[in-house]
Image 1: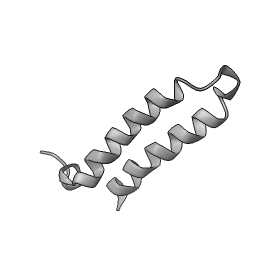
Image 2: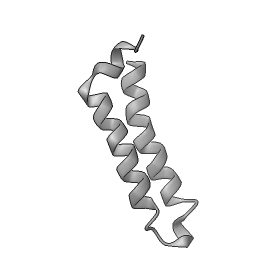
Image 3: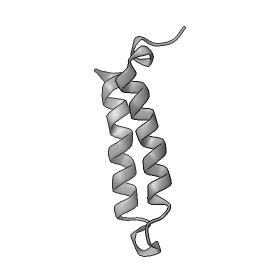
Length: 54
């Protein structure tokens, strides 16, 4: 039985955003690997987590 938030289009689109961000940050330079990319990935994850929590 799926959770109610899994039916929300905005939550589904947030998962697509995470996928796109992960592809994008792989193109970043090596020196940004642990600073900027980590922060961007966590921000994208936060969107879907906040929707699920709300």
